Image (cartoon, one colour):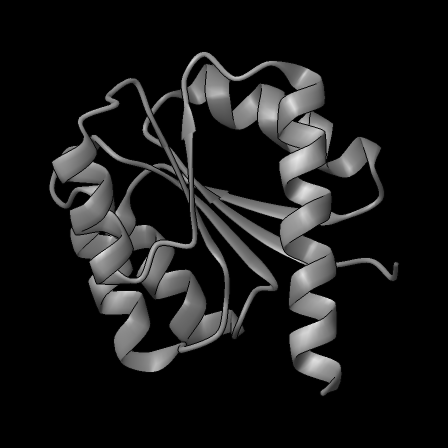
Length: 129
């Protein structure tokens, strides 16, 4: 798999630091923003990432609203939501907003790598067909 571009949006610096190290360690580029507004700005200025990973609960705009706004301009980019919440209605609302996958925090290293590889492989197949 070729090097992919990942956008990581989370208000927690520790999550951004650890996850960006993991993403880079498996050979991908990562850009981090601390909120959804900055994430949207990055997409507009830099272009479409191959995968978006976002936190659910952030100040200003939550992950579901962020996903809704992304889907207005990017239809096929996978969006992976991270949250400490497991409420089925919330997960369903996220899926309806365009979220592709949901991971419960805390997220174990190998689980994150497996999920990243799965979504980035699917992104490769979708963009080549």
